[in-house]
Every structure is written in C-alpha cells, then in structure tokens.
Image (cartoon, rainbow, N blue to C red; front, side, top):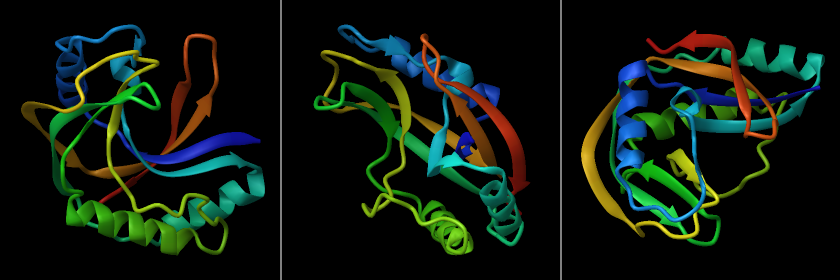
Length: 170
C-alpha cells in the first residue's frame, strides 16, 4: 500500500517565494514546511494498492485540462488546526475545472471522502500556536503546467513526498 495524492507542484521560484512569505510572518510555535514539500493538493487518494494505482494512472491519462495561472495573495492562520497557509479569496475557475475533471475521471476507481467544496491552499507551517488571522502578501503567480501523483511517507520530522508520475496540462 502507498499513501497517495494528486497535486500541483511549484517550480523553484514559486517555492522560494512561498517560503520567504512564511519566513516573514510573526508565528509562535510550530514548524515551517520545507520549500521542497510545498504544493497544492488536488485530491487526497489515501492508502492505495497496486490495482487501484493502475486504475488511477489509467484514468488520469484521459484528463485533458489546460495549463493555467493562479495567484496566491494572502496567508492565513487557521486557529483550530494550527496551520498557516497561502491562499487567495477566490479559487481560479481553471483550477475548479481541473479538480472536477480529475474527480470525474477517477470515479471508477476512487470516491473522494471529502464532500466539502474545493478550497485551494499551500500549507506553509503546522502546529502554530499563534499567527496572522489573514494577511496580504505580494502576489505569487503560479503557472500550473502538470498534475503530479505523489506518494507520502510519514516520518518523525514530517511527511516525505516523492513525485511518482506527472501528467502535463496542455
């Protein structure tokens, strides 16, 4: 079994800008997410065996979404969860369309557990005791050009992520 999810993975410039945005915040407690681990989760797939992974990979090959730009404009501390994330007030329409296409393509092999509307964000820090409720940041433009299948292994210092496969957005 592998613990898998689908994500958008930033290039080095976007990762660095996100890490810098978080480094400038007045946070109490918690731990920063390493720049190499910053991403936007599209769909969490959970524990996945080889047969279901094969189904997922086949289904993703049928998705034909376009590349798009999204802009992160604020950071927010989620008091109940202790998470600090970068986000924007609106989810880009192209991102909502991509998530809808992925969910539809995966319907034969996976039923998402989370019925809530999709809310995009990049987790920057965890276990924060206090941070900014909401704070504007210099806009970070993210060009989404591919969907990544990512494996996650839990480790004492946090999750370790490996990009297993990529599908380009055209």
